[in-house]
Image (cartoon, rainbow, N blue to C red; front, top):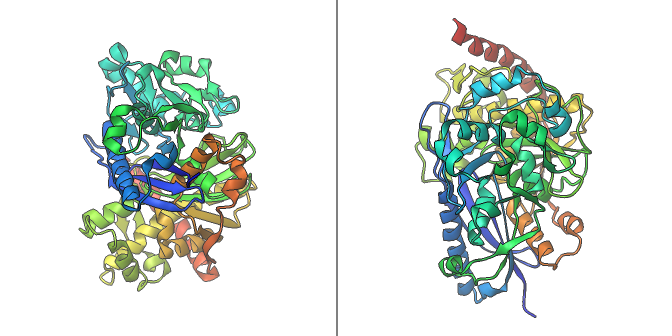
Length: 508
């Protein structure tokens, strides 16, 4: 019997990635494509969910052609598995067609509704979901907005879906009523479910005003929901009939692929939304209290849970600076050139800072927007770039303090996704967070993990956890510089006063 292959994809915020791995988890072919974000009003960020479907098929075609060029038949692919954004949804009709834009975690249009729900001070949220308060990035809030503002949702809508299940649904040629969600991505809703029993909460949905009929069925990530349909087989170059797994959340797959399989370990998912995750055995009341700013989710594997704090425009701020300020939109290699410029400037940039709230403030500072401050005539593009990297790091420091106060050990942080390739940023994080930072040799994050899950679904891997642990060879480590750590701590305290002042400007 010939070599076995598995197709995995990641449907992220700024791009999609499709890759085929062999049974030894070696990448055979890979393709990427950039997505489009639109900003119709201040605080609104939306996308076309059908663009995700088109781009995945486009990248699949590149991969099938690439396999043929290498003399490998696409018929050797045993299963398809994907992941997508956990905080983002659209509504579909009975034919599976989108009735709404795709709204994700970058959007703030639900801020007023969130504020009103918070005033009810309901304890059911923390008790059942581990999330003490509503949040503008929760899909539950998007669903309420759709129901209140889009007549087609009330008249024709049948299900709310995330971007990954939407893609898989269509690849399998299923209808809207067949919509599904895996048990980890379910917890990405933030509200409306029971995280331990992995089911929708009838009481929470009643409070939210979301009819139960709109909620997709809950499945396991490795469940086979269908097979590649004839039309998409012809378009992508892969044979019809390939089993399609139910998919998973991007954060859950990145966590799992980084070896965060047990409580007490942490990972930085350094993507568009910079997410700092720590695994636990379950809900920790101290971290599931109002005002922490943390989100609680269940993982892909049974019995796994984690908290995460985030900078919504973490990776997006980097792209914004390169594309709009440095004006190098078509030159991804320019990140490295900016790092070289930034190394000419000392840690802390002499007191200059960047506030990364480009899509609006959060937590205790809802009125703050993105800004540079403390610049002098000595500062250049390299200084500004270092300020951007450090500006995201200061928000990481806040999350780190919360974890450590709850007794979570953070002596090592694994960094994955695109940001893991930036050595300067990795060292800055080690210094700012006062912890050993490591990156992995298999740094593809979610996609190779998806291929392992696909192998498990196909019956070619019998112990998924063991297979994951075999992928954890360290590529590089970064040790904190104590002098820099002390400097950043002083800057962090000064930054608090700056944020308070900026937050109060609205009231002047």
